[in-house]
Length: 209
Image 1 (spheres, rainbow, N blue to C red):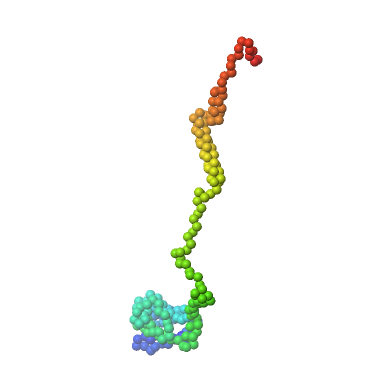
Image 2 (image 1 turned 45 degrees about the vertical axis):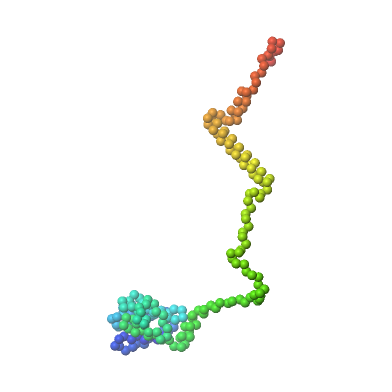
């Protein structure tokens, strides 16, 4: 079991032991803490010792005098075997047995080792690798000039037909607005007006009844 010794100045050190499965131990001057410390330099809720993967840490809870390691005030301090921390003026000493250290080390994830695949082909037989800058240039996209001439002619013809049709529709709409008569009807009437008149009948000819 992890061992914690709390030493208040001018008082007898108080040892505490905890199971490895204990997730947190709260320390402070208040009686509601797991470890109540009777010292004016310790805040009511001073710090909490927490179980983490592979070990423990002690985290300050915003105390007035802080939680310090080697005189330096830190918000979180990792705890290893033989660690000595100050809660205000109170000493907090942490220790582990060899069995506990072994169990905690088993929880730490092993560092992944890099695997380098060996190339069975000798270096002298390898083709020289082309640098990235010498990569093959992309093929140019075919332009309209390289298309089939028949297709070009057909496209042009369709374009002309649509253009003439659009022009005729626009002209018809404009003519109808101005004359209130369709363009085809106007062209038909104009054609009739331009037809030559029939010759007048002579005296010997009879007009058809």
